[in-house]
Length: 81
View (cartoon, helix red, strand yellow):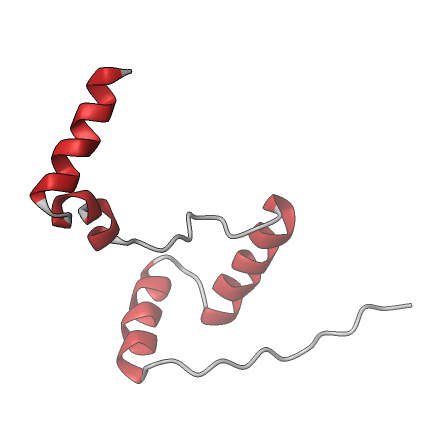
């Protein structure tokens, strides 16, 4: 039994689409081919073929935002161990 194709539809910013299609054209790819490649990679790797993560720059500085007394207590606890 032949496998049926299906249509994938996505809404993207028109400038993003145009800029991306220029790059894909230079690579000799169509948008459809690029999407197929993405899906093949998702299937073969069991996830996205690139890191997808939330960046939380403010979380990295959480300890700097603590009051001075709490920062000193945190440092003291490190040196007391």
